[in-house]
Amino acid sequence: MSGACRPSARPERPPAALPQVDDVSSNYIASGNEIEVFERAFSGKLPLLIKGPTGCGKTRFVEHMAERLGVPMWTVSCNEDTSASDLVGRYILRGTETPWIDGPLTQAVRKGGICYLDEIVEARQEAIVILNSLADHRRTLFVDKTAETLHAPEHFMLVASYNPGYQSTLRDLKESVKQRFVAIHFDYPAPEIEARIVATESGCGLDFAAALTRFGVRARELVGNGLFEGVSTRMLIYAARLVGTGKPARELLEAALIDPITDDPNVRATLRGLLSLVESRA
Image (cartoon, rainbow, N blue to C red; front, side, top):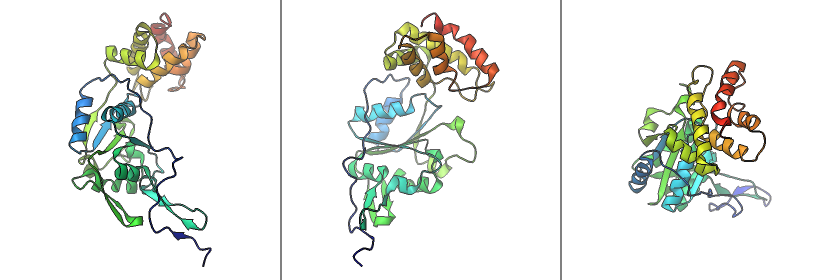
């Protein structure tokens, strides 16, 4: 039957128009020994798990390391619908045929580079299970649908991240998965380092960055007392960029630092009071 859909005989590479590699930039300020740990894991062919709160720089760090090591990077933002097919690939309908299209994980294993699974704990269990053979001594990806066994090249690295404070006991990695990784624990940087990061990433002056950082430190004291999570480094950077437009400072500071994280009137009033730490520098 000439009109029947049938799988192509050989896997087909993604069209050139599909984005494959993330853009990275070089401005990164280390807050500990994370660069050394990452480089040692890369040279030792070890997968890496990065744990830390929202907006503390996990993804930014991986981008920096991809550039530093001179390798491409594929990012998957995992969610509750992320399946094994989203990582490995799938057949797609194209005319009268169904060619195979590699997923980002398969692309990274074929070509070499970093495959970064952001918030891995949110993915479906069947998606996480396929990582087992890739994250241990075998460094092998089994692509069942194409009957392929792919061995990771020297310059392939699997990196995953998640926020331990955000996960419930029902959405956690199994010990058998965790123990396949080496791990780095991220937290918000020390104030003097965070101020430098805010200034570097936003282009604002160091004095204003330091004032924003003081606000962030004080606001994080409210976690567990009205706030689920604290003001992140990312939020401080956004605030600096927003104020840089020259519009009224308080209105913009609230838009960047308060409105995204709480609607509770009491918490909002407390955070508004803390804005005095910033306004004199805005």
